[in-house]
Length: 63
Picture (cartoon, rainbow, N blue to C red):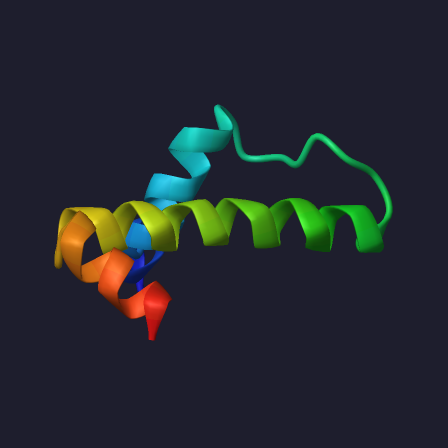
């Protein structure tokens, strides 16, 4: 269990480092949910550009 508690999944670790800390800037569940959604959307776009590339992303958007 000690190792399990220390292990952080890569996306969550990346999002936490982007946020600069372990807490959200907004208050209330509605606003925190929105903030988390925006962070996840940005993470997904960054991965989309990094893995398949920009031409593949543009082709996917056009279809």
